[in-house]
Length: 193
Image (cartoon, rainbow, N blue to C red; front, top):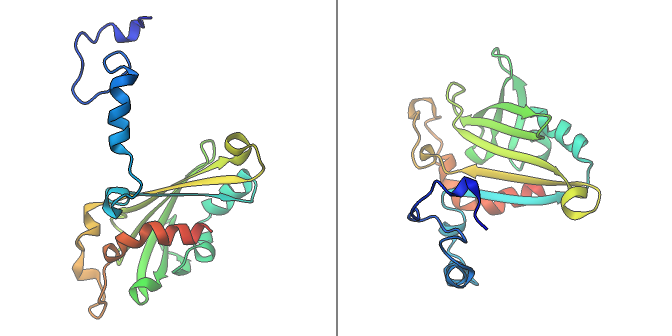
């Protein structure tokens, strides 16, 4: 069966695997090569760090809770002491992973999609480059049971590899947030439990 939307693609596109150009017999070995019983840590948590978990709470209530920036003080491992700044919607707290490091957070939430994105940065509030992308899904839809599923992804921004604003960092602090990137998967999973 030919689909009109595909008729304008006269030749296969390199790197795009579709059933029209790669029948199942050809695609299966490609997929099998991609699967492993053990994956290198960097392959799983290199460019992206994604964790998901079930939460025994109705999705609308969980979304409302997470959309309040102050909830981070209750459910995260190390963020404490949220206070509003003079800039509307921008909060200041302390990340105890960095020995009382200041962390700035702005929450961008969309009730219709139940997305809650936390835009954060250590030491300064002008460039919030650490973005925690979260979505609350109705567990009734995906698991046929009450509750919620939280989908959480971080992208490995280049600033995780070096502090772009060293002049704002406390001089005595021995660590940078990116030093913990390899532990983000396990750490975020711990927070969701």
